[in-house]
Amino acid sequence: MTDNRNAEVAYLPPAVPPTNHGHTTAAWTAMIGIMLGVLVGAVGMLPDVPDAVVWIGAVIVAAALVLGLVLRNMGFGQAKPGVAPRQAPSGH
Image (cartoon, rainbow, N blue to C red; front, side, top):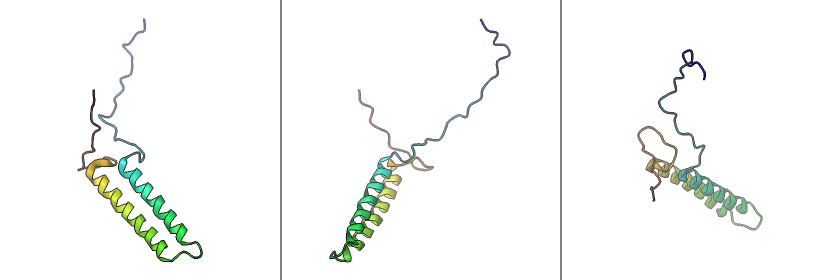
């Protein structure tokens, strides 16, 4: 057996803030919308395509950013002070 009388006591913080590096519904929705808008804008850069397609792509990007913010504030994003994150339903 070992002698634990001289063992060092480790003190840990009460809780570690959640880090999910953007693996949330809000982040995925925003990024997919941004990629779609950039794709539409890139198609608008091709010859013989109306210039309005570039602006449609810009509107899609702006809408994706707003939707990502709305979803984050609804609790589908990274936890932040004042907004409780949505919990996955606990099924049996």
